[in-house]
Amino acid sequence: MSGAPTRVFLARLAGVPVFDPTGDQVGKVRDAVATLRTAKPARVLGLVVEMQPRRLVFLPLTRVTNIQSDAVMFTGTLSMRRFQQRSTETLVLGELLDRKVRHRGDDTVVTVLDVAMESTRTHDWLVTKVAIRRPGKRLHRGETSVVDWDDVTGFGTPDEVQGAENLLATFEELRPADLAQVLHELSPKRRAEVAAALADERLADVLEELSAEDQVEVVGKLDRERAADVLEAMDPDDAADLLHELRSELREQLLLLMEPEDAAPVRRLLTYAEDSAGGMMTTDPVVLSPDATVAEALARIRNPDLSPALGSQVYVCRPPTDTPSGKYLGLAYFQRLLREPPVALVSGVMDSDLRPVRPEASLATVASHFAMYDLTAVPVVDENDHLLGAVTVDDVLDHMLPDDWRDREPENGAEPTAEQDEQERASGV
Image 1 (tube, rainbow, N blue to C red):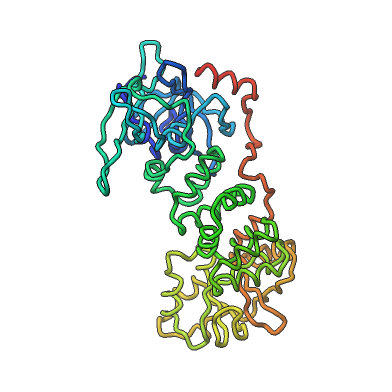
Image 2 (cartoon, rainbow, N blue to C red):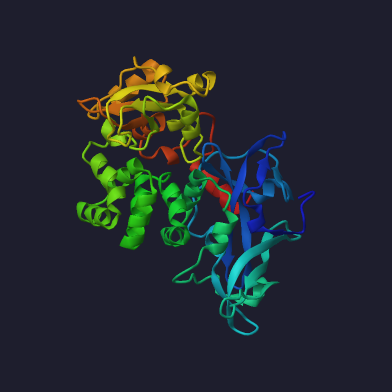
């Protein structure tokens, strides 16, 4: 491997761009795949590379030509077959970091911070070094050091409980959707440990990006109080979608544990069918009274926590402006607001001709509405024209795509067969 360092600490590769032979970036490193061996150092087979859109693929180390702190380069072609961990494989970052092992010298239980691989004369990559932290006293963090692989034991016997501090530090900069993909690829045990270590707000953001199956699994392993706190931190529509998937007794338990003001909009959403406008809508769009100014509207949609779809327009209603609001009057588009004087009133620049939808409108009706008027969001009103919420285009796509869309293989191109992929993974070729 020309240009490669003699030793590579694998946690430092997380997020490093991966480039093909032509110099184009094809993805980022998300993990490394190793096989643990009895009485021998672990052998690293390759890297897990994340390609867009959120697809994890396997890159054999034998095809990697250069590893730097800011780039990984490879030769040949990269298989687009979705990465599936084999029973004999271990994800280095996902499963080895934070593991408790024993140092042979003094039989102390230590925590794994990182592992380093080195290339042998036969061009195999073996894990030769382990960065560890010894237990600290009271509030002080323990001493850290780098030891030989042979100096520690316990990698072959996973802990009953494994922390996640160093794994989360490795993926600290990931967007919620990307971290959700990382969680999806972990074992159920490790997924539960990482979820337990995430802060409520961060876990809420990640849950919103997971499949319904993964959501139910994660929430089911949280204690009830923690699960209710996380649901409070989620957008009401996403919380309602998740609760729809739970058994009725657990759903009611969690709603009772939530703060009443957080549970109320979720309960309203649960009264609608999942694939109706009412079931898909968010109850937190930007709503202003007719006497609000353009400056106020622009200030509201600058909120970084607002999704691009919700930030594309503001809704004008008679007070009260909390949903269910007063009478819906119209909406003002973001682009129109940018062209108007800051002191102008939103009631003077709003579009009152666009027809809102009713909460019972079907998914097909709502999708047709989006397509007909080229919308990113549409208001939902009741029979008295009170604004109930808004459906965004991403809500519609989530309900139109098949449940397994995250795991589907690409349909274009000649992909390797399962047998060829298996042979490549086993041989490292």
